[in-house]
Length: 419
Image (cartoon, rainbow, N blue to C red; front, side, top):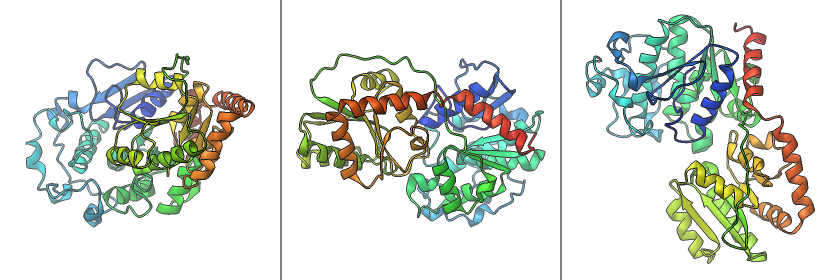
């Protein structure tokens, strides 16, 4: 397996999903997970976890070696449109960037930092691919299983080197993050990588449809693997205020639709002023949303928490009455599953993968703030409706587990004759 984020060093849901999925799969198969950075003290049962930051890479060859030809031309990628591109970046195939990282005999300093993304992300991705290929070439294994675009280049190179089948697990797409017109370096790598893979495993039918629509990949090449969830010991806490609470959890970026949550809050408060809206998360939209809430005169009912750790997030779940996820393009949406585990009725956009598994939740198109506000108002005033949504979700949750996802992956390996 090839991953990018992994606990305890995570930026978002990708690291948690990779950890929980690989943990479940390790009960069924022997797994080595190669990641850029890991804590030396972090161990996984039944799994070999390799963090590049912990290696003395002299024995693995030159990690700046780009001599292996690719099945596609990196020179053709339109760098000027890529959100990760900066003027300081040197293209990996020019051979001019090796001096940035030394002669290849020291430890891999590129990954001894907290930020696994940043301005030199393409440089990191290329170096990760080279050293992961050298590691894999010395191992005995059956399947290459890569998670998201950051590991696609590594997956392609390892397949070329070893001839082993390549599976790409698609948790998110560039068209989700940046919109359908995002056609830069990341998009091109996703497209070429998915075309070269033997099998794709998108986390939802919503994502599978986007792969087909925006990348032109045949759906026969895909098997949908819905994310699972771990059992949460849900609890209720005493709230510090009397009003009902509507909760949003997520990065404050275009993809998550935080400005829609603000519009929904404004609509609800026009009818019912005794409601509090809480937005937990950080991101590019934080400042503008803070200003807009003041402009709309709802600042006393609209609270922005910034970053919260897991303990504080679960406290918010324990005092909330409704969970709202207005995502513009959400491949899955694990936060809605966690809300449902706390017995909170969910109002979620149809443009999400989690809508496929939480079938009893109330759904709306992300642009339809009137319908979303109407759903919230109905839940606030109708206890019978609320109870039905919660009961339906409890039935859905029985079918959402990482063990189910892990078994389906192994069964798919066999049915697709990859092993």
